[in-house]
Image (tube, rainbow, N blue to C red; front, side):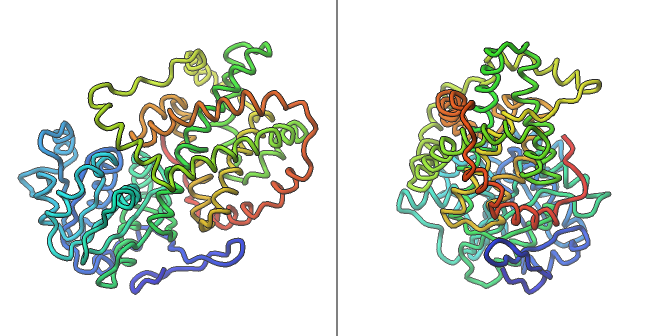
Length: 480
C-alpha cells in the first residue's frame, strides 16, 4: 500500500510486516488532494451502510469542494429519511440512482447484494468515462466471476470495507468529534487502477469514514473473509452456540435467567470485553483453565470443519448464488424472525439485573467460543489471508462492534436486523454450528483436554497479530 499523500506506517505481524494507515480527523485537510480530481461522490443506497457512509463523507468533506449526493431507486421508501438527514433534491444531493451515478466522479455502490447483482449493468452503463467505482463488499466481484462478467474497462475499482455494521460506522464517527481517531477499522482494496490514484482515493475514503486503522487486502480476499465471517464467529456460530448452551444449562438444572447469563451474557459481556482489552489468552486466565481447556478441545475440530465447508462454498460461488436466488423469494415471503426459542424471553430480565449483578466468564462457554474463533482464525491463515484481515474479520469486528451491540439488545435481535446477506447466512449455518456443539462438543466435555491442542492455542501466532492491531485500537468503546 503506497500513498503519495498520507504517511503510512509498518505493522509487525507474524512472519513479516504490513503497511497500514493510522486515521484521525487531523488528516481531513488532505482529503481533497487524496481524492485526485473527484468533485462529486454519489452514494447509491440508503441502508445502514449507505446512510452512515453518506453522512460521514459529507461531514469529513464539509470544508472541501467535494459534494456528496445520495442516489435512490425510483419509489424507494428511504427517500423521506434521506431528506430528513439533509440530502435533498433542492440542494442537488438527492436524486434517482442512475442520474446520480451519471453525474458523479466516484460512485459508491451500497445497495443490497442481490439487487446489485441484478442491476449492476444498468449502473455501469450510466457511469461517466473514468468514474471511480467504489464498493464496501466484494460480493459483486464474486457474482461477476461466477457469471462470466467483469467490471467495465477504464474505470478505477476500489473498495473500503468497514469492519462493523453501519450503525457502528456512524456512532463511532460521531464520537470522533471529541476523541480523535474514534471509528471502525476498515480494509481497502484496489482492484483496477487505470489512472494510478486508486490507493490514495481508497485511503481518503477510509479516513473520511473515520477509520482509525486502515489495512490492505484484495477484493477477492475481502468477500471471502467477510461472507465466511458472517456465517462463522460474527453471527452464525455465536447464535448457534448460545442456543446450544442455553439448552445444555437448562437440562443441567439451571434456572432460565442463570442459563441465559452463562450461555449468552457471558459471551457478549465479559468474554468480549476481555478479548477486546487483553486478548484471547486472558479469557482462559480469567476463568477455570481446566474446564476451559476441556471445552476448547472438545469444540475446535468440529468448528473448524464447518468453517472450512463454509469457505469452500463461498469460494466456489455456491453461497453467493444462494443469496441471489433468495431475492425473488423474499420479495413474496419475507424472512421470519429468528428469536422465537425460549431463551430470548429472558433477555430483558438479564439486562435489568446488570446494575446489581455482574456476570462472570463461564469456562465452558468461554472455551467453546474461543475455540470457534480460533478455528476461523486458523482456517483464514491456512487460506493465505493477511493477518490484519484475519484479526479484524474474526476477532476485532466481533468484540468491538457486533458483540457490544448484541449485549445492548440480544443476539437474536442482531441476527434479525443485519444485512440480508448476513441474515440468510446465519439462518443457513447457525443451525449447523448448533448441531455440532450439541452432538459433537458438549457430549465430550468430560474427556481430558488435549494438551497438544491447548499448546497450539497458547502458542498461536494470532496473539502476536492481535497485540499489534490493538496498538491502533481507538481509546473509546462503541456507543450502542
